[in-house]
Length: 370
Image 1 (tube, helix red, strand yellow):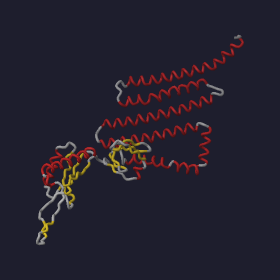
Image 2 (image 1 turned 45 degrees about the vertical axis):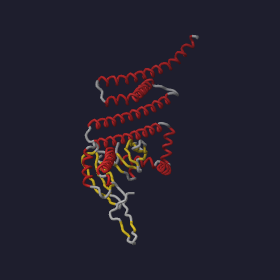
Image 3 (image 1 turned 180 degrees about the vertical axis):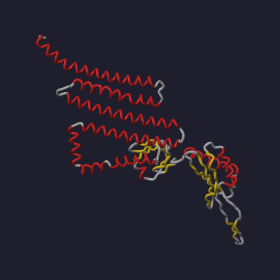
Image 4 (image 1 turned 30 degrees about the horizontal axis):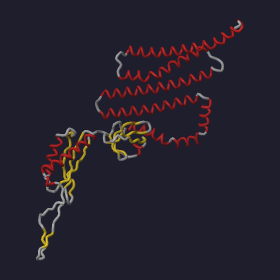
C-alpha cells in the first residue's frame, strides 16, 4: 500500500476502532459493576435468608441488562458521536433504558410484595388475617405490574415521531375514539375496577372454600382479570373478577372455617330415639374430625312409613365436616342394624279376612313386611 494512502486508511479505521473499543469497555465496566454489587451484597449479608435469596434471584437479570446499557450511554456521551448514526444510536439507547427501567421496576415490585408475603406468613397467628393480607398484596402487585407495563409502552411509543403524531390524532378525535375504545375495553375496565373492590372489601381470599356455579371448591388464584377456583375433583373453574361483584356465591370460610353439617338416618316408629342419641354422643367422641362443639340428634320429619333422624355435628373445616358426616351416618346405621334390627324402615299392611258367615274381619296388629 503506498504511503500516501496509509494515512487516510488509518484515520478511517481509527474512527471505527476507538468508538468500538469504548463501547466494549463500557459493557465490561457495566458487567463488572454488576458483579461487584452482588459480591458486596453477599459479603454484607453472609447468612442470606429468604428475602435476600429472593433479591438475588429476581434482580440479577434486569441488573445484568441495565448496567451495561447505562455504561454504553455514558460512553457515547463522552465520545460525542456525530453523523448519521448519532440519532439512531441515541434513540436505541433510550428505548433500551426504558425497557431496563420497566423490567427492574417490575422485579422490584415482585420482590417487595413477596417479601411482605414472607413476613406475614412467618408471623403465623391468625390464618384468616394472613390470607386476607396475602391476597391483597398479590392482587395489588398484579395491578401495579400492569400499570408499569402500560406506562413503559406509552413512553416508548412517544419517543417515535409517528407515536407523537398518533397520540395527537387520538386526542383530536377523542370523542369517537374514546367511545369506541371505551366500549371495546368495557370488560377489561370492569375487571380492573372489580379487582380494586376485591382487594379492599375481601369477599374472597386465597384458599377460601366457596360454592360458585353449583360447584364446591377452593380459591386457587386471583389475577387482575379472572379468578381460578379449584373444584373438589381437581377441575379448574375460571371466572372473571366482575362475577364475584355482580353474582351471589357462598363463602364457607369468610370469617371462620368452622361449619355444621347434618347426617340423616331413617328408622321405624319403634326406634328408641334416646338410645340413638346416646350412641351419637359416643360415636363423635371417637372421631378425630369432630371439633367438640355441636352434637345433636333430633326427629326432624315423620312420614307414614318412617321417622327422619337428623344428626347435627360440627368440624373445624369443610373437608373434616364431610368425613365426619359420612362416618356418623355409617355408624348410626350399623348401630341400628346391630342393636335394633326390627327398627329399620319397613312397609306396613293390613290383610282383610272374609268368613263364611259374611263377617269381614281385619287382622289387628298383623304387620306384614314387603
